View 1 (cartoon, helix red, strand yellow):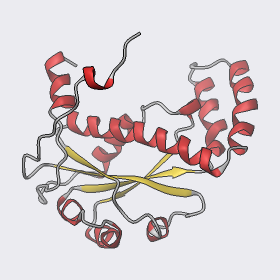
View 2: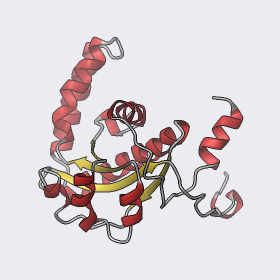
View 3: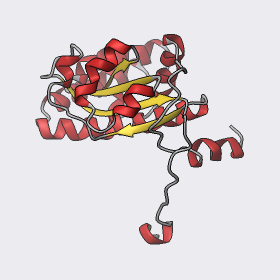
Length: 208
């Protein structure tokens, strides 16, 4: 990516609330966006994110009671992506690490050594510790998703203000296992969106 392209993706991104409702994103393209976003880092590569893509009218009607004041994004976006965290993500550890071995990315002995402590460690996490880990990992993936969408020519808005209680059940997810962490609206902006300001590095950074 050229430097100017990078600046456009990162610095040109605005949080959009009103989208062009005529713009749709096909399932194939959405899967492409998500596949690129899921290259984000996660602790010991357990990738705890699980997504529900809400793009149909029926799905958006189902989501509307949970979305609070964000109905405009829900009604006009191409999709609302609900990002859940999997409290039992360690159950995929063997599949992930076996694939790493099969594709030559990890030696068998390293796979065996890492899994021998990763799985028991995650199984022993308190609920609070697991949720903290999931929120960090899911936030990294969500930010990458927003940048990927921007690189594909779409706009996004991160939504944290929504009703979590009952959301998993509404989309046929096990609430004892999957916790809603964030919703990302995505589509083509129908308005420029508000420009925002940031504190300077001099205000928030120390160098030693």
